[in-house]
Image (cartoon, rainbow, N blue to C red; front, side, top):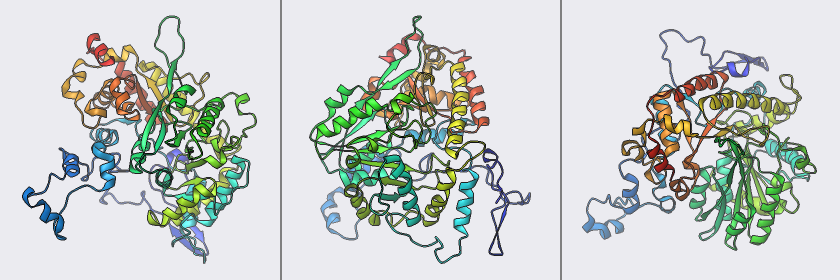
Length: 559
């Protein structure tokens, strides 16, 4: 199978594969006639990236939670006793989530991306196809007609071919022999892996540490398990400038803040490195402090290490920091490889970010058998198995990724180089537009987001009415109030043609309402050069805005 260049394969393509004298025709876009129906847009996730019919509106959530939809309050007791009556009271999961099941930043900005013509730097998925060897592996797995054809159920805990490949790889990462059948579990994406980790670890009353800002999924998954999120703020340290210029900087973990949050109730610490949304790469010193805190909390405390961006460390820490921790993923430190931490860690990852295949939805958990066994036990009641075809395809893909690719020693080297170039392309556009960003010659970085800082110049460019009640009252924003970060992102999407994500949803409601997130927005560079260049042009229009917001309104919001 010969595929077009990776970024050029953004439509379906014609190809045929000769296997056992049988030609299998792939989907053809080019042969479609002029009168054939043509789908102009692709809704990649209608209930997540946009509005769908199930999105609660106009107080529906509150009505469900309080059971106020009963048609006859006088007959409530009769309705409860009648097996045929409708009872709209929420189940335990809905009660644990509370009103957080309403509109979200993703539904709101997904709507904006569909209503306006924007260069979309919001959602964190690549807008190109996976590498050719991954697509070839998927096609070959799909048409496999042997006795072991992967079109039926496979082992619930993970397809044998895949868990063996993962065990082989993680044995190198962790500097120990990983048992594929007892220390690996395959899930439907990393999100389900995190869900299962928390469901098997946490009971009501347990606390789970989150480093703030954090990927918003964590907070609600903790609540679904009955746990209580405890927030440990990362500290933003700007670069020093003698002229008082607002600059980028780096986010650091202050050990004393973690120590203050640890207690005998701490059941888990969620560590995400490289970090979403900031791009932070936790350094070895910070990880050692986390390890010390795990021990101090007691034997019940474990780390859930979310490492989905481990192969995208586009600005590596100093080499002296990495001595002795291995280099199977250049620039990345596997927390479980630290002394004494294997027995206290579940490592979570997936294929989506690494292979630009977020729709494959294959994730996994790696850890000691006493932590993985409960996940194995729970899996059949959540999902009998992840797709066998996709698991087999990934098992065939992983060895190929270690081979030379596009002039690089491996696909992983190519991937890092690609993202480094895209990061610099977007960074140039952000700086020219007036944003302050990290200096990646000084600050390690990973993942594919830039956490850009809003400068006073950009605050002044925002039209005054955008900070008025007509715009700031928004049920999707934390606390129902859209602050500066949200207002700027919404204005840029509606009037300037570029979509970014406000930072406030990545903070606890309390911190967002205090203004901790006002100065930042999250911008994705996992996009084609064409999209990034289009966004850069649109961003230049932000600075040229002639309607200036009054400094008094800006300062009032900042306070």
